[in-house]
Image 1 (tube, rainbow, N blue to C red):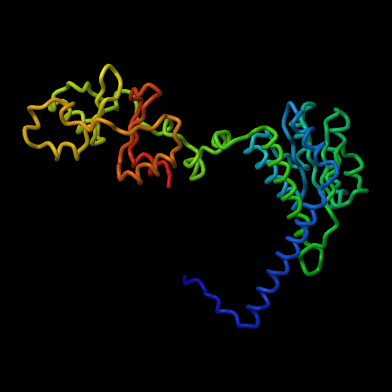
Image 2 (image 1 turned 90 degrees about the vertical axis):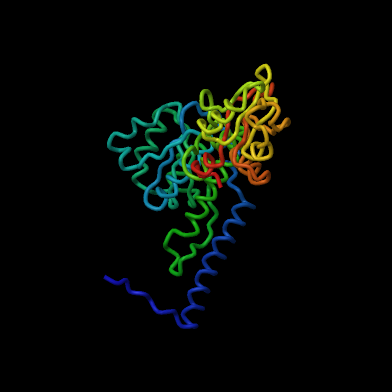
Length: 329
């Protein structure tokens, strides 16, 4: 079955669509700028409450607020603040047991009158669990019950009938990002910490270090610098890296590559490894980042990196293919 391809819009319809998109983006951008200049008064105290939390941050909401809440919980969890989303309806049927006295709740409702949140509100009050409310209605039931009130400004929704959650959800999402980033800065959360929570995919690959990807132990093509060239050739071919690392008293003293072999063909097999080696091989430490390692290989037009400790003892070897297989680009 052949898919139906829509015909290009007329110039008038194209202009109409672009104008609608620009209006939506402009409306929401204006709201975000206003929110930035008029942050909720309780924002800073909400941050302190989360920092003092010994449990987890529980986020809940219904409908579009629930979707935004899931994203806020995910962002918090991935940036150093343990958090998860609890569905308000499921909470009323047993999932309240997921919310403990050492937790903090963030409840989201644009109107502040979402009945499905009622049982969670009662639960926080019963067990003295701090509750942060996010709503556009400062006088709502939710905000009256909240310990910390993150009231959104009363900005118009971007939809033409003014009803579909658009501007309000954008502001809620942005406010959640503001909470997460402020908490990151207060915790001193750095890129290395971020990598711990993102081991998968391209992002995880970018956060990995050489020590995560290098070959170690028996896989290393390492010989004493006094080894005969026959042993060097065997090490270079059997280990599969096309290089041999040479040491003197356990410390790196040279390296032999395919290029060194080609430059020393005359009488090669009568020589010792140290007579053929390049004397000052470059190395990287195990904590070198994977993207930095890739950049070094590209800059030096090499395919293999030697990994050494602070005393220049060989601890690993990293091939360009290891980085590519891991998704480092």
